[in-house]
Image (cartoon, rainbow, N blue to C red; front, side, top):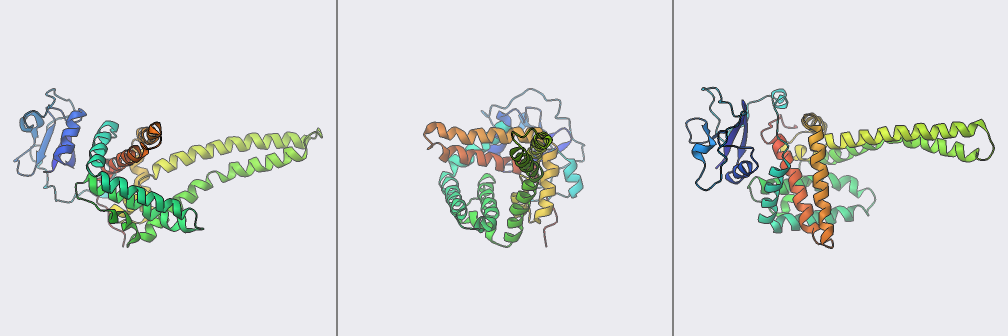
Amino acid sequence: MNWYYAIGQERKGPVTDDQLQGLVKDNVVLGDTLVWREGMPNWQPYRTVAPLGSGAVLAATPEAAPLPAATVAPPATAKPTQSEEEYFRGDYTVSIGYAWSRAWRAVTGNAGVLIGGGLLLLLLLMAGSFIPLASLFITGPLLAGAYWLYLRCLRGQGASVGDGFIGFGPQFLQLMLGHIVPALLLTVSLIPGITILIVGALVAGMTAGRGSGLQTVGVGFLLVGGLILLMGLVLMIYFSISWCMTLPLVLDKRVDFWRAMSFSRRRVGKHFIRVFFFFVVTSVISMLGLLALGVGLLLSVPVAFAMNVCLYEDMFREFDPVPHS
């Protein structure tokens, strides 16, 4: 059963029964939060429809203002009618706790396909890195396949290891470019600083001990090059986070890689600091597996990756762009 819930005047969802209970536990849905599912005549406070023993919070929330009387949620199977611009004016929630609870349930409930399938894809990526140019062709499709594998489990659609290879289908070229182009652009941001550092090091090295004014110039190049390199690193971090949802967008929404990069940047930009912190947390969770002699990585990495997929789902669940022709 799919549910919708209201934060202020904005409708969110659909979410499953388990996802709704996760929102209740995380205090996102409270007793007075308006909810709706197919078969209900209108929106109702969650406290009036909460199952017995669900632990629903009965405190009111100022964000749950009643929706207009004429507002009726569409069936869960209906596609959103928002234009792309209207969609990007909307908002989404970055919740580490909610993502963790959903990711944990998904991984523990589908351990075989998610851990086994993810490990297979990882081994293929590692093998490709030893073959000249192979990684350029397979990295994007394989990473997108991992997103798709996890996404199907999170959506309750069922998945098999074969879903991890869907990236080698019709969207192969766009997924390949969706990996190569951002990687090239990120690398370009470092080239000016590295180039100036090399020139400065050469000048300083050739004039060392001669007391020449060129040595001062060399040191100046090193300082300027270091500063420009630092700025390049900041840009690299900013755009790597901004473009983080490019591959799942290409595969899930069937858009070309350039539009996917733009969509990802615009959506992430609404809460860039929160999204950045979210990825810091998932990176830490991934590394926690090392505390169990590395064996814990078999659980910590899939859970962290599933959290990232949850974030994508929260950002773009109802996004319905014009597909790439």
